[in-house]
Length: 167
Image (cartoon, rainbow, N blue to C red; front, side, top):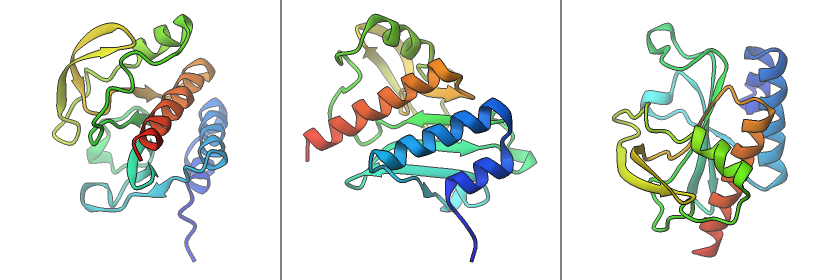
């Protein structure tokens, strides 16, 4: 039986700090009842891509190195995207986070990588600061270091809490 757990692919495809941080994120997701599920539909079927949901609503996505060569639009390593495409709220607008975390989050607002899969969502206020055009994913963490990883976890927590508050 094939092992489709994200941790299996992290160990297979990543090394060093990238592997350590990706395994830490996977453990965080599982410890917080957000197990990543391999996304194998359509465009993503040949990629190492996982979706994370809470109560059937997307929280974030993870892509690991290993995509076919013709699709090498991502950096070597891994990427975390938050998701806001189904949100009826503005969970990222004025959440209670400290200034240091806001600064890190602002550096990872996804407004340069929008595609037809991540349509621009227009102008957004993110933790009190305006950005435009912002992708529907809101945040994108490419090969996150320890500081960016903590921010990605916090954004995941905020998104999860938003979903649960509207359930």
